[in-house]
Length: 69
Image (cartoon, rainbow, N blue to C red):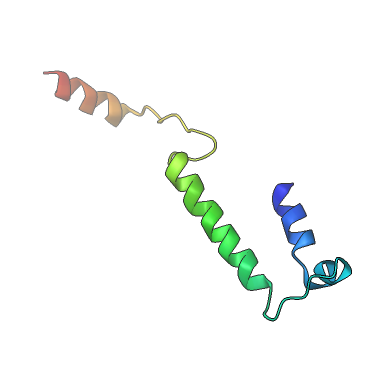
C-alpha cells in the first residue's frame, strides 16, 4: 500500500497539481527509492519477511546423526 501511494504521488502529473516542477525524470527517484528500500530490508531482515523453516529430509537426519558422533 505504501509503495502504491508513493508511486501515485511521485508521478509528474500529480506533482504538477501541487505546483512541484522537477527538471528531470522523476522515475529515477522512484528506482533509487526502491533500491534503497530493498537494501534497508536486507540489512534489518536478511531472512526475508516470512521466515521459512528448513525441510527435514532423510539426508538431513543422516547428516545430523553423523555430526553427533
